Structures are given as structure tokens and as C-alpha cells.
Amino acid sequence: MENIQSVRPRQEKKRLEFIPGQMILRVRREAIRLALGTARLKMTPAEAGRLPSSIAEPIDYLRRNFGLKDVRPLFSERRSALRRVKGTLKARQRLAILSSISDSESEELEGITILSMAARKADEKLVKEIGGTPTIDFIEQMPARWLASNRVDPLQNMQWGLRAIQWFNASIPDASALKLAVLDTGIDKDHPDLKGVIDNYFHRGLNGQDIVGHGTHVAGIIAAKVNNGIGISGVANCKILAWKIFDDQPIQGDFYVNGEPYLRALQALIHQGVKVVNLSIGGTASSQTEALLFRRLHARDITVVAAMGNEYLYGNPVEYPAAYDGVMAVGAIAENRKRASFSNTGKHIDLVAPGTSILSTLPTRRSWYRDETDYAAWSGTSMATPHVAAAAALIASRYPDQKPEEIRGRIRKKATRLPAMRKRKWTKDYGAGLLNLKGALS
Picture 1 (cartoon, rainbow, N blue to C red):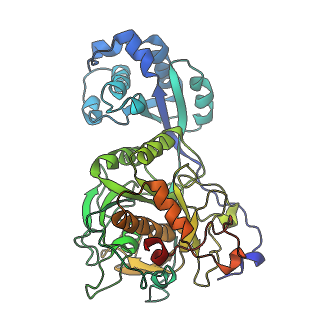
Picture 2: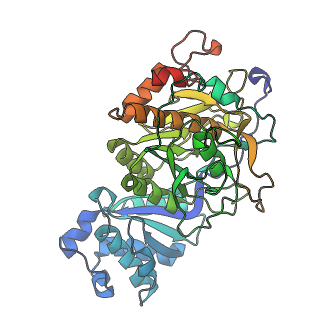
Picture 3: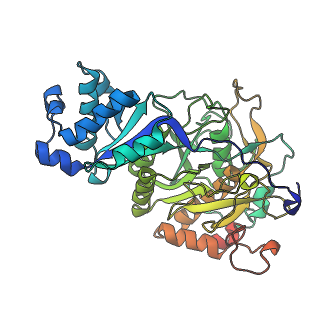
């Protein structure tokens, strides 16, 4: 491990801030309801023709000038059916706007659509031109989210991370009834160390195979079966609900979250009885739509844990979703109990957890991207985050009445102060310190 103080400043790594050609548009529901009435909107071309010009004209403008190819209502189950409606592209796009109002389960989510554009370099211009329209609540570029892990060769067969968080000394409660969501690259639900752990796997519209292996690795850290005579031990024996939110092909050399299934998953997990969410992803752009969904999760007593990011040597940017209010942000330490050289720092950090050479599960089948199978040691704040998410699940099982802020406060209060913190209660490098599972459960 290289000494942090001796590392020379490096050129910032070139990653996307936004996904090219994708926008999120939200129309003001009042504008449509005022024009078309408060009754249930009819999903017909005739009804679409009555769309107020103040909304229809911006959509037509985007189609004529920026190659608007598709409008998809984000929280409507009629997305596929709308594409089969006979009529012009213009009519189908207007119907999608109506569906975003009519078919959303909550007023909070009404009017949100995904736009696919042919003109990929026009995004910033669009935000300025369309965002000022009175009937448009907001238009924003789709933020890029990438994996917060660094792949390394297996270096050891011992799980030092469990020792570091005092897992072996803790009184581990039964969390088999608790559901923890993993939104990631997918999962190998048939892995011998994960059999019976995966409660459900959602990958609608996406290949079910975990090509990258990242989601399977995260899941193993959380809940690989203990004392089954094979492999490794997970931190908690909770049930995992997995959502695949990544496409299987990289963009410009990196894998990025597919924004539409990701945002839909954040809404869908509310109805699945999930109590904790692990997000080992990050990106430098914030999003009004994403922030709205995290507020909904927090209001429903769902604890969200996210990675600080691995770009310290490339400018140490603030990354989301870790930086949103109410999200528990996790950095990584190495085996020497010092901050991992890649781990981002900042005022929003909550604590740190083991994040270098973390041994965990991988899909048992190779992919075009990944030769490693079964088990491997990887590094990243991606690997630190599931230690904390699993700890939150155990706390929620032992203390079911505690709210997310109480769980977060307990984890921070019981964290172990590290020598590098110099007796301070909190630092931007380590937050409140190293996850202490024994203390958090006592």
C-alpha cells in the first residue's frame, strides 16, 4: 500500500458526469389537470391531442431540433403498451406525458419522464432553454453512476474485515426475516454460498447474468452463508433482494448505471418490505429526481448506505448518492487501519469500514469481461459499504423500532476511533471512525 502523503497529484480520471443523450423531464401536473380536468385521463390519441400547448410545444421543439426519439413515463406500468399504440411519434410522445400523470401511484412522482435524444451534445443547452418554461417543473441530465470498486488479484484467504469490525466478538442476532436491497450489476443467485439467501431478483429488460460480478461480490460480503462448510462468511444472515441496474456493455471504458431501471428500483423497493439499501455506486452529479426518491425512502424508515467513492487521487470529488441528506456515507480503510489511498473524504462521511483486498463471492461462470470465478479479493469503497449495510440490518433486527437516523447515530456513536484521527471524534477522512459491530449491537 503506497503512503498517502507521498502520492503525487494525478490527473483527474476521465469519467462521464452525465449519460449522453438521456434527460429527465418533469411537467407540472397542475398544468395538465387544469386543461384536461381532474378525472382519470384517457390514454387515447384524441386525449393526447388536447395536451396544453405550453407542454406540447416544448416536446415538439425537442423532437424537431434535438432528435427526441422517445418519451417514457418513469413510474408507469404502461410504458411497454404505449410503444405499441398506433399513431405518429408525436402522438405517442404526448401519450407518454399523460401517462406520467395518470399512472403514477403518488402525486410526488407525477409528471416524471425519461427522454432519449439523438443530439448528445445538446444537453446543457436543453436544460437552459426548456427549464425556463412555466409548465415544466424541471429538466435535468441523467447523472452518471459508476461502480465504487477496484478489481485486484486474490491476495489472501482470510477475511480480515470481519476481524476489523469485531464480528467474531459480537452477539449476532437472527436477521433472517429482514430484507436488504442490493442495487448493482446483478447477482449469481445459484452461488453455493448464496443459495437460499436471495429472496428475489429483479432484472426486467436486462440479462440476468452478473457479467461484471460486482453485485455478487457485494452480496457475499453482506450475507454469504455462515458455517455451511464452504467459502466465506457474510456479516448478516438477512435476506437479499437484488435489482440489476447496469447494462452489460461499458460506455467509454466504464460500466455505468442504466438510469431508468435504477430510479424505478428506488421506488419499487418501498413496496417490497425492504429495511436497508446498499448502494456501492457513485457519481459527481446530483439529481432532483434521485434526491426525491431518497427522501421517500427516508420517510418510510428505510436505511440507505452508500459508498464515498474511489477518486481521492483524481481530485477527491463529492459523490452521490452518498452526499444526499439522510444517506449513510462509507469510506474505506486498509489492513493497517489507515484510509485506503483511493477512498474519498469529505464533510458528509459517516464512518469507514474494511475496503482493501476483501474476499467475497463471484459468479461461478466466467463472462466476456471477467475470468475470475467463485471467490476473489477486490478493493473499493464498494466493499466497505456492504459491511455497514449488513451492520444496519443486524441493528434493525435487534432494535426493530429504531428509525434510520437512530440506526445511523448508533453506528457512528459506537465506531472505533482510529490512531490517525488523533483522538478527535470525527474527521473528514474517517468520519466517526471504524465500524464496530460488537459495540453497535450492545
